[in-house]
Length: 127
Image (cartoon, rainbow, N blue to C red; front, side, top):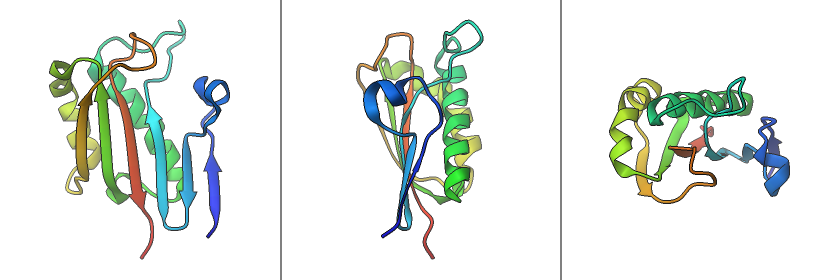
């Protein structure tokens, strides 16, 4: 099986020792992804804006892997406050459209309290 590692250049990748995504055969595993920092070094304010940012990062990783959101079969959402999840629904509907994956939402602590959502996906790129 061929394995390809995709790096996004995110600040946590070298600190923690992981990559944004791994393509293993027909599967693409995208690591838990938080929002990218803005020019001030801080993520956007609010779960909805952070969701958009994380989805953009995930989209780039999927594209490099030869996939897109229509190939995603599993997604996990992690939020420190479950009540903020509804703010993200429009962006998630836009990303997944007519190809919704199986999904799980967890309320849990994230790596830093400034982050309001982390998203992890698995995609299938086989026949």
